[in-house]
Length: 222
Length: 411
Image (cartoon, rainbow over all chains, first blue to last red; front, side):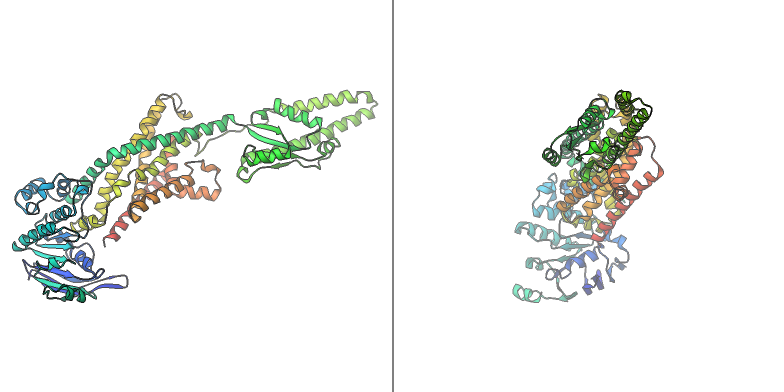
């Protein structure tokens, strides 16, 4: 097992959002988390990313509890929140330079993850002039700076055209094949085709779900 | 730490990209604030030096003695430089009063002169002013009316006493001539009372001239409202950037520090943009500040470092308001409302010495009041430790609150 999440709980004041989140994933797997709006998908990912604190629970990765050692999280985990974490006035290059040193950035652009994401084609474009797909690819590019073993994606394909979705999926496929673990919160049935495991987040708990291509059945269970 | 530095550099780049627009906005605001300062200074100087209180006189003005008295006051007395007495009908006075053309109305009751001639003091002249003018001027006018009333009655008593003495001594034929002589002597005594008292005006804000008071007030107002010009820096879109930064190990403290330092760059540029034309105006003698008369821009250059701590404190306040407000529009509105409100209460538009005691105390407690005390003390060359402490406390409070808000947004 590469990651093991056990008993994560989170409440906002008296409202319990997550009551007992437990799951595990192996290297090279992709876990999709579905759920209706407000079910707590984003909260769960932000807890795993170290942004929010959990009331209890653990998140083991390679034998270390990341919730107890949040300083390790940036080294082993990349997180792409629902909105694009980019500075609008700056170019793609400037945004990437916040996270990459010059040498690494040039290398990644010529043969690494950033090349796979096709970011080199719009390096000088200010973020405010980018399409949604460009922004999402750039956000992922910023998140994978430390070549993390885990990638958390919060609705990665929301409001993207099919070409962009395919581009991102192709990247995620390569990422997985190299041993990375993808955890994504999604509403998109197409994203499920990429995943090895699928969970529905309901009443603060994760329920395993086998997606058989019947979208109406899935919706009825959300 | 490396990533916090990188974030600071990224914010600097953002600030640099926003600079052209910022400089243009600064220039527009500088022109507006400069025009307002010139207007206020000119208005203040006019009211201090040139304008007179116009007082309407109504009622029974038919007596020739009264007419002579009014004419004497208007032509010969020192008060003619301060007060203009205008005889008019009741209706004319009412209309002029409502139009704001009169400072006050003096109503002379019927039979006033008979009462005076017979040595009585039982008819009262009523003096009517609006509540807004119930200031030092009204108080002085009340005192003058009282003094004049006493003087006239006592003088009349003296004349009667003299007439009785002359009659008792059998010098009845001299009474007319001696009465005229005594009348003239008394009038001379009253009219030559130029050295009776002296008013020393210490100035505003612990000794500043009106001109320097408004000058510093307008600079502070510009700093207070400069958040409106720099609002583009706060257009973060959504909170994704903050969450991402936190996930990458850049917490609320480092985020705010990086953004605040970049914001200070914009504020500093705005301050320089404002100070360039002011320095030029002072060097060329276009702006008359009595304390700096004939010294060119040198005292202003020495005054500039005093503005910086106040600018940093205001920047922290603006930062907090933008952070606490939900969305850029709310942020701009809160800047505007707080800026104007605080500026008014702390006497940036009008000397706070004229405000009621409680309002003045409140204005002094506010960040704008702390900045005003600091800058005014700096203009006089000595800043007390309490003024430093107040600015530092507000700066810490605002930065602390901003970090708390950011922290609570990403927890």
